[in-house]
Image 1 (cartoon, rainbow, N blue to C red):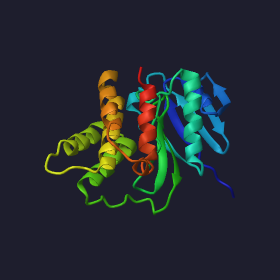
Image 2: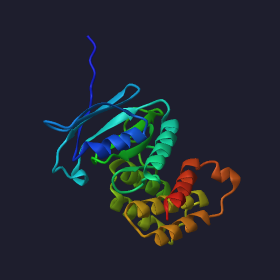
Image 3: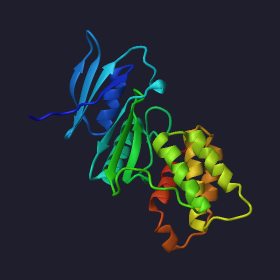
Image 4: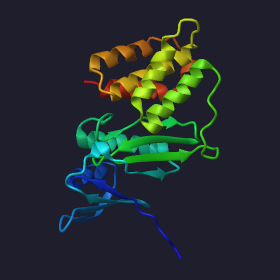
Length: 237
């Protein structure tokens, strides 16, 4: 016997969902409007199905799925390009949105998306480990980065991430290394952007991060963070 699991997700209307997934390279393989709205999209071996519910609020959605891949970097680049072509810019906050690509503390390299129905679609590539979260580092600043990244890019609890980052950046009795400071400031700017801070405030945060003096060797150790800094600059008006 061969079985297959297909996520059934909700949305208030199927047209915006179809547009979003088409931008990602999915094909609409089934679309129904009566007696109820229903949509099926497929990309390779990935199939997602959607039920339209008129009074459904995407902001309250708890729906989602995880897509495992062996080409997460390529998919992130392809998805961002497709979204930019469709929407005129890459949506990085609000609904819909696509998040940064990161190595997580539970053995995956992943990024998160939220579709127009409010469904959380996580796309990841295993990097090792058994799926459990690694123990938090003992170093104060590495520990802050560990928890802030989990809050921001796994749990999506942005206020909690901001609290962790603000607290550690305000310390005066000890100082982070230049690499740690750059990473902390970039993540804080990212969280500020996603929580709706005005562009001028986010730009000031990015400028502060970019001003941290880093050698070429140090920059080579944080490619994802520096890529996110560049992405954030491009997303601002």
